[in-house]
Length: 140
Image (cartoon, rainbow, N blue to C red; front, side, top):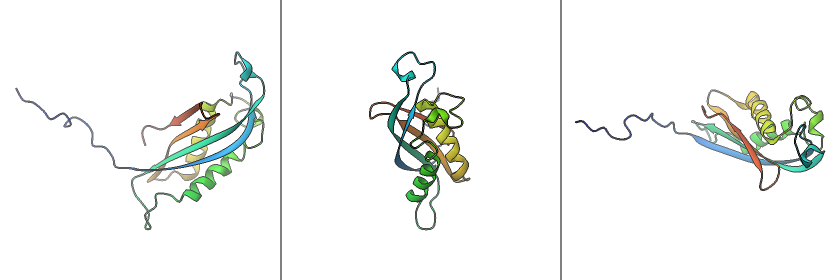
C-alpha cells in the first residue's frame, strides 16, 4: 500500500496581495415586496469596503494606490450618495438591497480597474455596523 502526502492532490495556491479601502455614502431606499418596515422609505449611512487582488506589484511596490482605488469607488458611489436609490438605474428595476448594491459596485468598479494583473475580489456593503452583504468573484 502506497501512502500519498496529504497535499499532493491539492492545487498550488497562487500567491496574491490583497488591497482594501473603506468609504462612506448616505442614501435612502425601500425594499419593494419586503414584509416589514424596510418596505418604507428609510435611510442609511452606508459603508462600502472594496477588496482587490494582485499577484504583482508595480515598480515602487504598490498593487494599486489607495487614493486611486478610493477615487474610482467614490466616483461610482456618487451616483447613490444623497439619493433615493430606488430612482437610480439599475435600482429602478431591481430592489436596492445590500446584496444588489454590492454586486452593482463590484461590476461597475471591475469595468474600470480590472487588468490582467489586478482584479476586484470582493465588495462588502454595510447598512449598519451589524448588517452587511458581500459580493465576490471566487475565481480571482
